[in-house]
Length: 421
Image: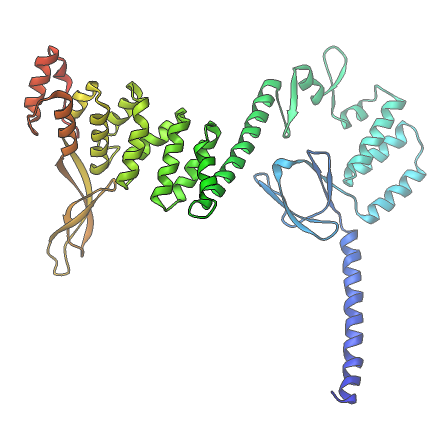
């Protein structure tokens, strides 16, 4: 670099940098002089700074820049209240007014009113309290502090009224002590559930590594119902069938209602047969009216695809509950809806593969036209197999014959059986 170029850069860049620095100082001073916001936290702390986005009534998170210039996001649920700090000029004005004011009722009322108009909440409160020291019955000060005069002549704040009713303030609202205890318990359980879910994720990640033995031992030891949400979260995202099978067995060992509900759903909705049957195996020790009722409810084409309906029928046969016989007779043949396309590239309708409106497969028409919905009656082989297993009879898909037989066995109880639509 030549001496001339160095000199030119020195003569142009240095003044520019100095000007930029001076401008930064001016901006910093201006920013300091602007009115600031104060977040009063529920844990007792206070954050001073400015909102990056003006807070709205439905905001769940506040975007905030602290006085140190750090941009943060803080949950609204952690904030007790928001206060406005006075500008630097307003603070100076306040000090002048305070120095000139008399320390009596009128002087403090005037200062309190001025502070209220200029967002100086702490100073306003202090002056109203000073008025009450001088005159405990001063109505302006009482109202300024949120007091109301009751029928008995006593002054009370809204907080006093709530406390007299036995309520406590929790997360910015007044609730009963019992409700607070319940909310705190739920919050603690939520935290515990979240921690457990994190542990389960870590253990599952270790399967297939050198730490697999330790991870499997941890999973096999799970008995706490609080682990169920975490198990289900991992089950939904895990791709390895053997690992998902491990999680199914975890649900079976826990065996609470949430775990059993999940197993019931997996035993019908899971597409992988090995996993579906594994879930059904875990349900066997828990068979009973409630379990049978669930599988019967899934014999309806309104709730199940053709495949799912047959999976539910298979489960009823495995559970060997004869109370399911009427429902199985009714579901021998069901009508399912399919979305198909009509009209091919030549303007003609052609037969092809369609798709059930509830997710199953079926007959449809070729691509090239508009989509329509058709209804198709379908026989259910697993329903027939379960009927044969539970009754020892086989009338194939002759539903009227099944109904006559069942009426003979039960003295007419099958009169209400109707084909499932």
